[in-house]
Length: 208
Image (cartoon, helix red, strand yellow):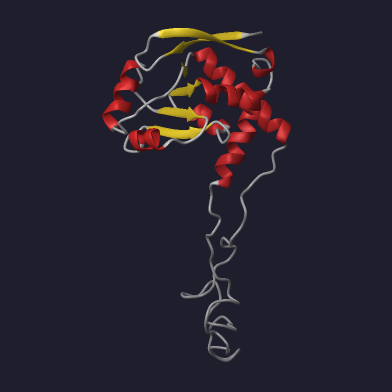
């Protein structure tokens, strides 16, 4: 099942057509793979640095606070028991790694399925090239207006260029990414995906 999308220039005019090969498209399987990869990606973003002290780690409590019998109180061996104020924490968090293992084939399938879904939605915009010679934010904003992008957008380029980085850096709803580092979560997160033709060629090689 091949798919085609229009190639636009920076003014939003159609200047050509781009056809995807069959091995870049996956519309039948991969739904669960997308879910698993997104969950794994978000899990990897967690720092896992939360930490509490057990009764063995809290300072103090080295001696028995009062004698075992004769006071009418419950016996106690340490003032750092979890039931005492200032004591240790029972079953509290410790530093841990939240990352999940996802096979390469599953990641590739998820990326292919997620990108296919965005193509079917009409959320992918293809530019012949992205040229912003004056490095100005307003020039980048004008291009987005020409492409009728009103919400969040991800711009995918083959490599970072100073002019594009400078022009898009102050746009709060726009993120710049290299085709080699684009992931499933980012494919799904943004309202529009804007590719240059060279970036889409590089991204298609990852999907094939």
